[in-house]
Length: 67
Image 1 (cartoon, one colour):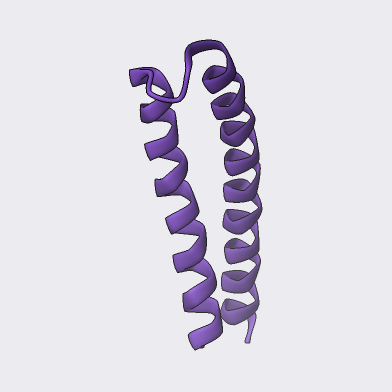
Image 2 (cartoon, rainbow, N blue to C red):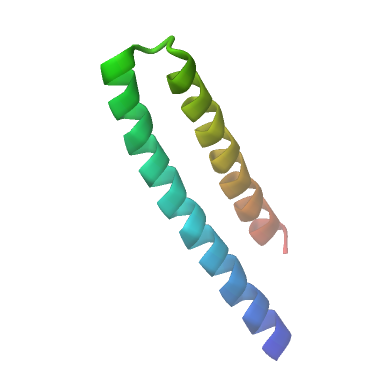
């Protein structure tokens, strides 16, 4: 029981951290896109990283729902 509670707490911490990273990177992306344009290499790199973080977040939620 304790291990399951600890695992859930770790999942929540990971989820919270991912949410913070996503929000920060989203703000960075918008700012960079406004300054450099949507097709700028840096903007595209930030967008790809944001996609990876969102995918991680979705995977974490999918695992949670499956258990």
